[in-house]
Length: 125
Ligand code: SF4
Image (tube, helix red, strand yellow):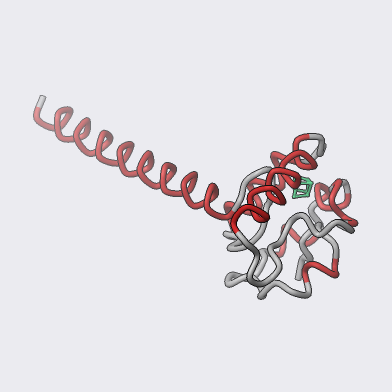
């Protein structure tokens, strides 16, 4: 199983992902270039009972690390595809990833509906 790029100390406190990481991700080169491989400050995952102000501050600090990471796009897509339920990945919090996924689902539905409508028009014409 692919370990998150963040420090193993932090990962140990986080529940395992709900969905197993796909085989192709296990050798993903992006993982080896992760800036956060040694997350000694514990920025990427919330400790238990973290106050909101502390969480917001920690997440912003994690995002600043992500912003200078050469594999941010790959990391973000990985987290969206799994989906990773916890922590900051690819510059997005778990809540932000849920918003992105909801938008993608809505867009896919709109495209399907458009394709269906276009097919009906073509069949009628
Ligand atoms: S984008 Fe952020 S979470 Fe992802 S590997 Fe880079 S530093 Fe780590």
